[in-house]
Amino acid sequence: MQAFADGLMRVKRAPWLVIGLWLSTLVLALPLSLLLQGQIGAHLADSMAAQSAADGMNFDWWNEFLAQSSGVGQTFVPAILGFAAVLQNLSGVADASGPPPAVVWVVTAQLVVSTFLAGGVLDRLARDHAIGVGAFFAACGVYVFRFLRLSIVSVAVYALLFVSVHRWLFDGLYPRLLEDLTVERTAFFYRLSLYAVFGLLVVFVNLLFDYAKVRAVVEDRRSMIGALSAGWRFVRRNPGAAAGLYALNSLAFVAVLFLYYLAAPGAAATAWAFAIGQVFIVLRVIIRLQFMASQTALFQGRLAHAGYTARPVARWPDSPAAEAIGPQ
Image (tube, rainbow, N blue to C red; front, top):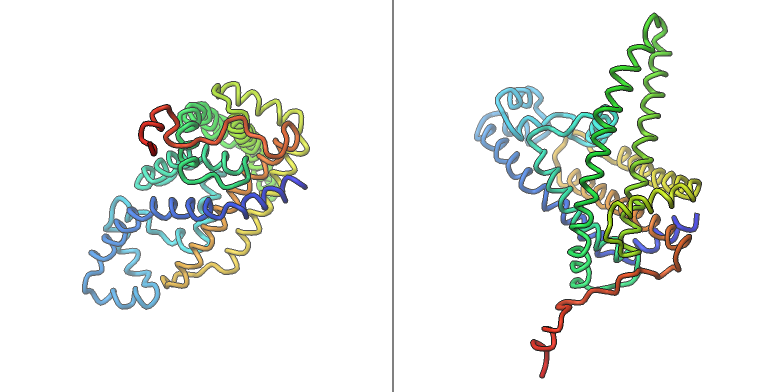
C-alpha cells in the first residue's frame, strides 16, 4: 500500500523524532531503574549471594528478595526478563489487568509526555520536512490541551471496553458458553474467539482516535468532538484502506517482536542484554511513528494534497513583541 511506503519514508526523513522519543522513554524509566537498583544493592550488600547473582542468576536469592521487598521491588519478577516481558504485557492487555501499583506513576507520566509530544510529532510527519526545534515544541504546545480533552473521551471509552465489555465477555458470556461443555479444546476455541472479538473492538476504537488526532492536526481542528466525528467519517468511508493499513503496520510490529524473540537474552544481566533491549525499544518507537506517519499519509492522500497542513509553521516568539527584541 502506498500510504505504508510513504509512512516509512516520512519516518526515515525524521531521525530526530526516533532519537527524541527513545530518549524520553529512557529518561522516564531511569528513576524506577535506579530505585530498583538501590533495593537490590542494599539486599545483596556484601553477601555471598552477590557474586553468584553477578555471574548469572541465583533464583534462591531472587525468591528471598521478592519475599522481603516492597514497592518497586515486587515488580522484579522473572517475567520482566527478555521476551517474557513482551508476553506479560500482551497478556495484561488481553486480560484487562492494569500495571503493578508501583509503576502506575511511570505509566501515567509516559502517557502525559506522549500526549504532549503527539501534536509536534504529527505536525512534523504531516509536513514531511524539517521545521526546527522551536516550531516542533510550539506545535506540541498548540495541541497538548486539545489532545488532553480528547484523552478524557478516550479514557472513558477504553474504560468502558476494558471494564464493562471485557467483564461481560469473559465473566458473563464465557461461563455460560462452558455450561455442560466437556471438551477442553472447544473451551479454548471459545476463549480465543472472545479474545478476537475484544481485540477487534480495541482496534476499531484505536483507529477512531488515531484518525481523530490526524484530522485535528492536519486540519487544525479545535473541537475534539468534531475531530472524533471526522475520524469516524474517514474510517467509515475508507474501511478497507484504514483496516488494511492498520494490518500492515501490525504485521511490521509482529516482525519486530519475532526478531526480539530470536535475539532476546535470557536471565544474564550483561551489557549485551541491555543493548539488545534498547534496540528493541528503538524499533518499537519506529513502529509507533510508522503508524502515525502512514495514517497521516493515507488521510492526506484521500482528502488533501500530499503536503497539506492547515496551520502555518509556528515560530517563536510569534507575536508583535518579536520586533522589539530583534535587531534594530
